[in-house]
Length: 134
Length: 385
Image (cartoon, rainbow over all chains, first blue to last red; front, side, top):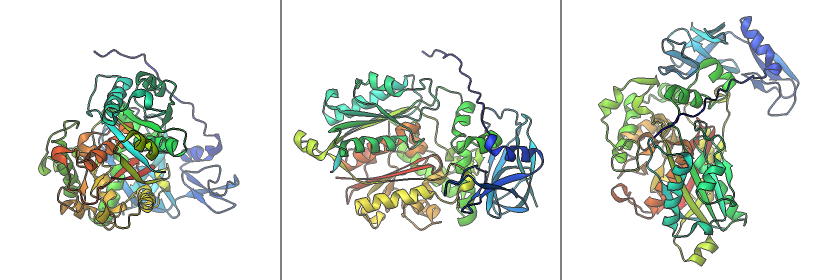
């Protein structure tokens, strides 16, 4: 016999204050990473503290140009929260110079393909990076 | 100080209409009977469960109470899919520290209390939520699929070679009554199955299972005092990697496996794993994971993992018998239980109690390789008699 448990909904309030520039940047079509002014470590996604030298003196840098796809998948199953997607979706990691970025690919892509990145928001209003094949 | 395993237990993996404590109880009961000791002999209890899907959010104490260990621990540990190995290490440490003479490591997971989309959304959070799942809807099959895409592009590994891992492991599971899917599959069926996360297909993926496992450990002094036989923990290695997928240098392997195995081999005095080891339980949550593990553990050169399975080198009669009980792929992968289920299998093999699935033993040494996330945690143990 199975009984139904009481419903418990987790909808977290996530603090992004220290990396707000990244999230605001997406709305302006920009993708930001951070570089540690003390030791030069590069971070994408950005972080406000350096995990290597423990400095919090970070410089914001824009990531752009032409990237290369290092790995990808086309998702045919939909996790809770993404029911709005009606068709399979492609997630890829591409390298832009010293930074790697995750994005949804708007075109069919393979590992090794050259891509450019743009930003946009999905049907639920979440801003993100999209890749287009060059 | 040497620490030995004197008892093991493991439930059938699959869909269980039992609570997490009832399921853990079954594995603990079998382990206590196997060790031929009594519940009161145990000094410390370690409860390993990821428990990101079950209704009992703080399950260590309910499990501990139900197994009759109230007052003896519990220490709860979590290392995603490598939780069982972290539990074994914690129990081992409690003995080495001198705080306990006999300790039990329990691994348990209830994964089928949620529907599949919710379960996918939980597993999809196994990287770094804000930057991956939140924005892109990553899933656990998706993470391994990304690694598969890199391995296939770099080394020419084929869908057929991935499927060969599934066919081998299902063939073994067919003889294991404790497996979630005790049935054989054909290469054609595996290759023609639908995509879950390209390039991974349905038969490249492990099922969503409930299950529990347990191991009872004791100090060498205590084992001698009790006049018992033991399987000894001869090597331990652990490592980890970045949470963010963008912060990895390479996707065609798992650095955590490489580092953990180096540490375990050094401790066990192993220079050539294929010469020293008879059997191995590898973390094949997805078929690509077993192929990467052959390479990262040094069973073959990087990029030759596909060929390794294709040539039958990981099958019975090969260089090393891998996943004799069906692996995570066909036996099932209840996260917290998996690492200790591997220990259960390695112990059964080394005691030559594996029945139809018994591998030929030359050195009487076995390896377990347990990964949490996509190489977020890595554990390797070498056992011997």
